[in-house]
Length: 467
Image 1 (cartoon, one colour):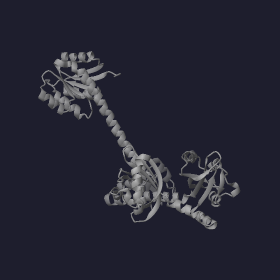
Image 2 (cartoon, one colour):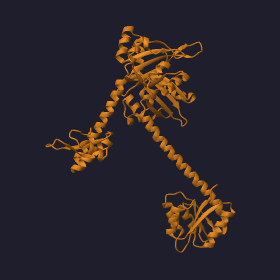
Image 3 (cartoon, rainbow, N blue to C red):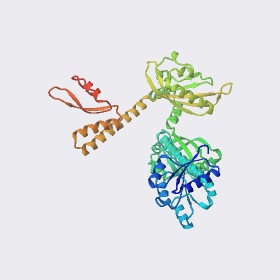
């Protein structure tokens, strides 16, 4: 060890303490020590000296080794505690070990003390590292659960037989089951009867291939079937992790491509959907007639390459778009990306773009050509934001309703109402004022999220009321 070992000696005989320290030095240990012989001294040094190990006599007239051991173990600190005694018997020693002592050394055999301390310090360090590792694992598991809980794709984990071990809310929503219901099922229960034989074969083969991406038809709780894209990984602990995405919209879009040009254009306009085919160099080879309408440009004004298209993206989204495009090119696989795009009229819209490789179509250098589906999802984003806001309002109203029933004090009612609006509803500030019917002036009586001077200033003038 590079640092001196801090030894706390519980010993009433100074000569015995010197013998202990001399033996530790002879065993090659560099020590820093303090000696106590009372309970108050022992408690003080545990807090101030923070020893690496305690070496205690068993029998002392003013303070016993048993009491020292009990105090050390109640301190909730994993400190090696070793008894050194000339009188302790085997039965008492066993009892002391059961009470939490790490070892005992007879005074006539002090040569054991140095190795015993070294061993116990190593084991204590091992226990400390194990606790840290366990705490890190628990934190990692919590973060993992939080992460998959927020994912829009369905995520699940099964054992080798396909029994569900973990499902996220999106997967429950996709299939129409509650979490408890899904955890009682096997993945085969979510497949149509005709698909189950192939599923069993995939599960058996999965450890050999490690990962697999495929499309299959899946069945909801209500019996309805729909297509999904599933990515499966075989994990090191022997479980299967799956990510499922409902691709009904994508399939419907692909089917729509088979319609007549007029019908396709009408459907695309209604869905705010457009397509563009890009060459290996990122150039826009062709695009649907709906793409200029989506960005509000004339065809002659349209970007001619992915590089020019990037200029329309929000600056904060460009690096992410590049990363996704590079990832798609490296993997040669379908990639989804969402970003904000500036229309010609200056308005920002939310866009979802799907990049799919055109199978068997590459340029002279072997690079891939791509089919891109671009959709304006601004209304969907706005609807989601509206739902979030309504949820905030609902949380505030629910809290106030409960408050009205519980609270009888007028001041507390006002204060708690403002607190609920800010803390539960996530509003920036809230205030309540009383109206003087004579002067028609409003006097704030409760607020949250702003200081008293700001409230007084805003309400000082007639009609100038904080919003």
